[in-house]
Length: 123
Image (cartoon, rainbow, N blue to C red; front, side):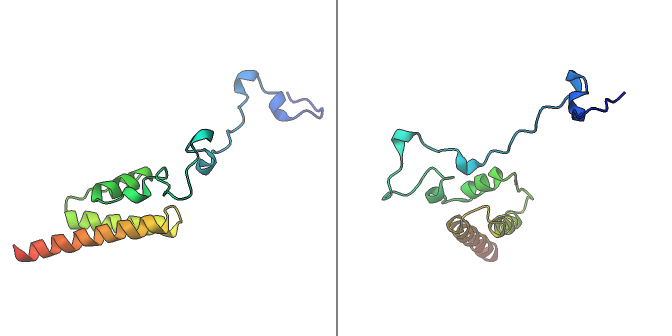
């Protein structure tokens, strides 16, 4: 039976059925990547953000995609690389990765695709 007073409906439900408030989403950019005494200098590149300056291999591109929940394995290496390229394009268009990350990863992928296609032609 419901009371007709000005109390909200949540206060009438038994304690075990009351829901706790939904936690606020955490903005990852609001979490500091360093402590107060370790502020990065303005002259050195920021190496704390997903290894921007360290992306040099296909493995590192796979790790970047894995951070967004994408794992790619088809069995054909060239098809894998082309699918990675399409996924990177989608992430870039959604503004989830930086332009520098996108261009570096795209360069690495296209270089590897070209190398594998030339290798196929020779054999």
